[in-house]
Image (cartoon, rainbow, N blue to C red; front, side):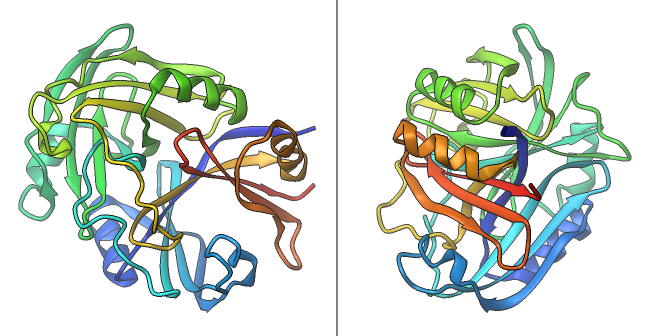
Length: 305
């Protein structure tokens, strides 16, 4: 019997591993997580890098409040490239992370001289949810981070952990159906709405941005996902030359029980695999990667039987 319990971590390909760790630790309250791996060949990942045995270092970070882990991947071989020179809200794929904070306005005042914010804080009423306060920044390598506060997003001692990963899609209705059927997200934390329209121009690269968004959660717990479709201007597709390990958001990883059974089900249903079932040498761990309807990679990971 298998089970999928929300987002475990999000992976980002980075140019400078130590500089990125320093930024997230010094300014955003992260600490070293459960995994720190020096650069080494990883033959188990060669299928995802199109036959080349990749060599990379990895580091996983988290906040004291818990939430989704972030994993930095510093690829050495094959030589990584920028997925895009300019990362914009609306670009198709894993696109941003949302960190809960106790007070968006206070955080902005404290960090505005040290962090690259895209604008000042904003506040909006979301139907069925309530007041949502938010502000966006970019980390040193241009990756989008959203800070959010409100009655349903409590930040313990300033930060409340990464609560969800934002995934930009081309057809929100289709993606909701896919994620609810295949990834264990059986509940809506925030119902579909268009309340962010006109408020995210600074991060979308357009004017009068029109966006439709929702947040899915799992009754089994774990981190959530925000699915959003930018209607105007339309999001840019994933470049065909992109390799796992290139700079930017790479994939969202879901924590599971019995990944072999999940992979078997996906194969029977005809889902597209990026990486077929893999078992970690010497460990009771297994993982696989599939693509969602937009070709966005999703990892499914389990430990033990």
